[in-house]
Length: 299
Image (cartoon, rainbow, N blue to C red; front, side, top):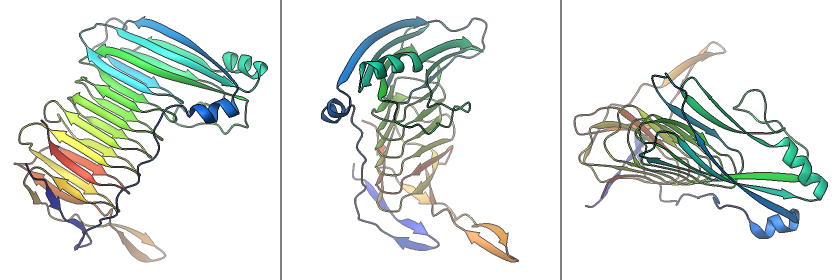
């Protein structure tokens, strides 16, 4: 099937950008850099089986990582099977011991959720923010592999030094990264996935059950859908092109949002445009600054 190149419509003008997107580095540990900066390196393997609290109407897994990769796979299991590798990098033995004491893996089960949380002095009380630190002389990385029930809701994220991958999960999802790739494969349900520096790949087993949003800043956004989808897409890229394997029709432009400033009305467009596949359906937002957007037919 030949992909169709869509026009990028901004304020009524058809603009085509050919500049390729910049994909940020999304590798794991830079071994040479770490050895020079942290001559001490020690690893620990962690394995746990985490049951869900009884009596809950729904089940959810929350994994909040900072340094390291995250891999989640849906399987025929009734509990969360956790395998992790903790790597302590330190400049001195004293700094290593300090890191062992200060950075912990906190696990709790309540309200139908299994909550896995990498805690340390870099955390604020608000889980969505971090505290600025002077160099503590150490870094602690966790690389996680989870097997979870297929029908479970997910909220998983990392920040640095790793990619995030989710496969075979059918519930609602929220998946995040900052410096690394995000990949969802063979998923169902609805939700959002985002990163800043990295490519974003999403493949659905069946059409999304509801509204979705997939966003990066520096990287390509690739969405794969089965069959002939019925959906409305909101699309936005600045340095990139947009392609679709499916025939679409353009939706009417949305009115620019207005605010009043210094006695004047200010109108602002979000630079996105809309297209409809089939008879239309849930809104799916695809957004990148530097990169292409591809809407693909799943093999």
